[in-house]
Length: 372
Image (cartoon, rainbow, N blue to C red; front, side, top):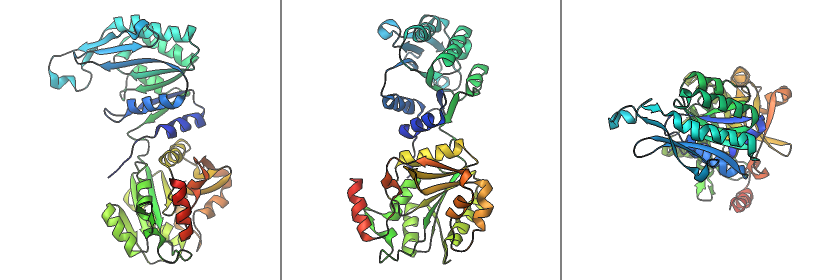
């Protein structure tokens, strides 16, 4: 089962790190755009003004704002047809100018002229909004004067395209943001200090390898693979329905070569995340932030860190794949990180324990207690 959804904390941290003025969320119908926007609003921890549009049971599209008296609803769209099957498909509404002139535009004007709130939230901007020139002018004035968090319809119109192309806009497409990222779960360690295969040891009701597989599902990777030398790990992978490669090669560079070769041969990827199977406290927020920043800086190596202490996981862009295939004996990705320090971006973890790995049975006890 894939439990992927966009984490609002990761998105908000990403937005703040990039320094962009505006954040726009797009995606197909039902992708969770409005849910993500609502979760972002909760995390803002400050007051904001808003403009919300939604379809009623009539059906009509109405709009309202906290800046309009009594938050009254105004109609901005009515059906082009009475056929219920057609109403759920495509551009099936015609614009009603009154809602823009009496609600949307005055709300934006009030925010610009009178509000002390830093953010203006819009859910959503779509094709109906593209029909009102006065509203479009107000939106661009708003973008020039305030900070906007908004859902934007996944459709090409002149109005929407102009917004998406602005340099001060950070656009996140929920459908495709991680489409060209792959993940290799490194599960070939010998567990010499542990006494037996640590990846099958229990950690709060799951084996470590099951925990790592769950972590890998925090991001909607294009390809996901476990590289292991262990029969018991391979059996768990079968049960978890995740692809694996079992090998008997001796060194870390061999494991990396095996995994990278699979990714290259099976799916084009802009980058590969190497996820250790023995770091059980990595959070969804952190892993998504790591991937978001990699996509934003798509020519850089991104690695997790906390207060200047760097660790794993790491993501390597595709132009390092050839070097990953030809690492010196015994060496791993750290060899390239030391070789190209100026190309490395440190991505902040939520806490130091996310970087901790398990080497001994005592580590299991200690980190299990921390996770509760």
